[in-house]
Amino acid sequence: MDVDMTTSGEQLPASAKHTVPELEIYCYLLVLIFLIDQKKYDEAKTCSSGIVRLKNINRRTVDVLASRLYFYYSYSYELTNSLAEIRGNLLSLHRMATLRRDELGQETFSIF
Image (tube, rainbow, N blue to C red; front, side, top):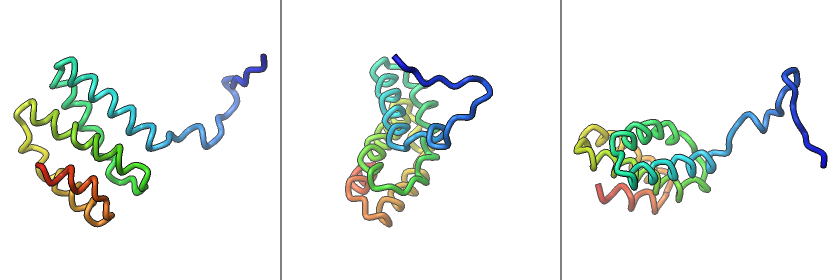
């Protein structure tokens, strides 16, 4: 069985250094749902605050996952009674969804 292994002196290809945004969002979503299910709301709030940087990704394949992720982002803040802290971020995300004509994203943000 041949296994490609890199030694300490070899460089990884450029494609291996960057993660796929869909994969990153999916991992955030899994971790966030797990923390909420375990009733670790403060940890979920901390984890979800790091996902705001994903709003700069402009790919249509990300829209469905991102809308679910942003729902749980706001839900984690709601569970800790601090939803008012992210109201500006939610408005900004809704505006971005509107400009990109992301209907699912618009529906997600219109409930808050």
